[in-house]
Length: 212
Ligand SMILES: [Zn+2]
Image (cartoon, rainbow, N blue to C red; front, side):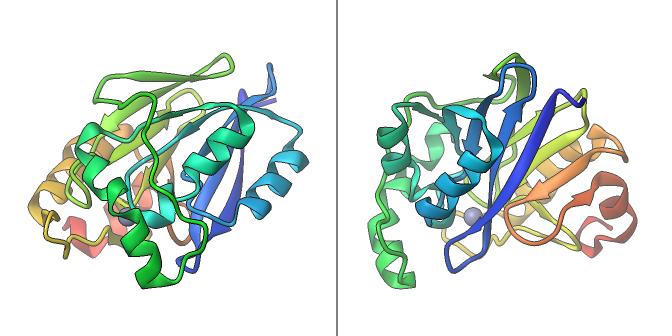
């Protein structure tokens, strides 16, 4: 059996790929980017049989982070990530939630901000933390090298990249981060983006027009 398994739960009107990643040996897991629709996330957790021990956030946008506070409280777990530079975006969640009609959205104060080079544990499994800014300043990517899976949030999509048309967005920085940190993960690295289908580094190197 693989050391990790993953279940994907699309949440919020943005169909954001919340994921539940668990260590198959210990059956301890993490919820990554619980943006909302907590009933759906709780049902998916129950189906996995995993015991959630933490919440991980790739970045501070409402569709990724707005359910984290409530889920963390109800499960009695801590929130790790994103980078500290995203806190001002997290603090803006109530305003964005109202704008986009997302109910139950709350800002969160992470228990731990994460940085490039950090490692987070899920059961006995380790995920490497990469800092890939540009979509947001504190955006993180979580990488499990042994299996070859990267949770890339809103950095890289199949055939596209994350939006940078925010006042704090930086398209050059995003492309630089993808080229310098994600592409070297290798062609076989499977990427789970925050929206849309799963892809791989090899496919994006070959077909993604933003990386030419
Ligand atoms: Zn985003």
